[in-house]
Image (cartoon, rainbow over all chains, first blue to last red; front, side, top):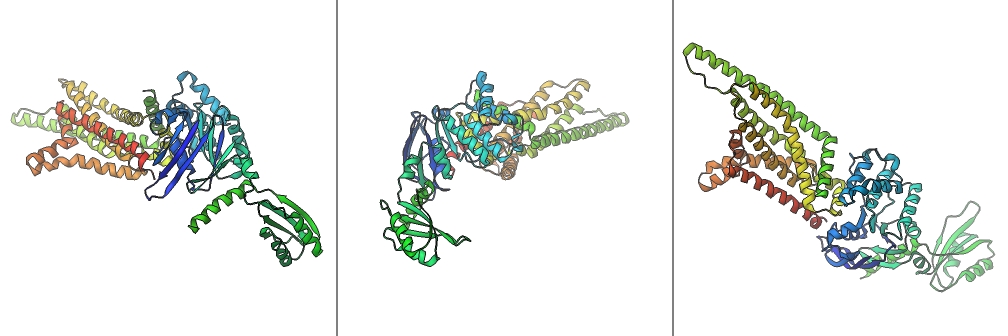
Length: 319
Length: 261
């Protein structure tokens, strides 16, 4: 449904905001675009929606080139930009009606489509309210309704859950999940749980380059940096630190501040493929310290993300 | 066509909920009413004096009250338009850019021409609505005049002010598409209006250059219309002026895609 090939966008200064990015999205799939602020997520989305041209490379949506067939592409997409593109002095219903008109929704279907978009995003109770009187969360949902109103094949959402409260975030995630299958969706976010909860596949992007493309499960189980072990011991700080650091295969020992009951929690990272749990247990028992907890923690998407993005920075500094 | 109408409809709706449009139209109508009243009484007084002179010295009175009032009034309308239209166009594109709604328009299946023409026609409609009540004043004097002056004068005058207004609206929209700041758009538009207004002072340069500059002034062509003359060269001048700036606005909106950094 969406094919992106070597997409590059450089602004005046010569620094590429998006640097040879390639990926594909299959029909009915939800693709998460994950990256720190300024990674090039918005730029990529703006190129896909025809808002700005790429410097080089191609992108096709539903078989149409976003640059040469821009109008045709725009007929097939719904787009929620970073800031919801709303007119504050219009009412919710009249705004959605306007959007339906410029998106070529036929007159006889218009009011039904507007009502449907309002129902899906849960804003029907505010239909006659001026948009400027709505809260941030409602405005965001009006923006979302706007992207759905013409029932497009492809929906592109730039940070769709920004400004929503936790309950609304869950609603929006469920809405997005419900749209998958019949719609192809790209959403960007810098919130990691969002990706693992809603997306079929994740593109991690940093400094304009793709750092990884995979399913959230694979990324999590990939254990790129190995395993993490958490221990809780009643022990003096310094000797514990020494003991853990000297276990072969252990790296990065982190002690948390002591609990009031004298327990210390520590996390140890182990190199890939090495199970050092038994060594840790043996070492602690040998010292005669009471061991309260010892468990393996699989790396969260967050850790992988941090690793990927900071590794890149380290490489960049080295070169 | 449908998309153009959608833009037009939205713009009209926005004008009628925006305080700026009400203030501009209100100020325009208040000032034009005040000055119309002032011109009418001044010319009437003049006519009365001349009548008295006639009785004393046997001179023939030679004043056409309706014509005098109309000339003065159309002159005033053009001045008001000069000051007030920048405020009608200042937000046309700059507000869309600032609010990010330009991103909606430019990622929708509509062309730049539809956006620009829809907005231009809406501003022109508002301008016509603003002028409409003033026609009432003149029609009032017409029906009270003996004999009734030719209606052609009135029609030519309003055609002239509509064309003048359309030029300024096209130029103002173009300037609004260059910036995100309404205030900058308004100031630059006003400055640009003044330039095309007073450019005919250049006639003092003499020769071909002087003639050209004089031809380029928006106000010189307007004078013909207020005298009841519909001159083809003036019509062509206005229509090309409007066409040029609508075209430039389309190009400017299109170029937003490229210069966004």
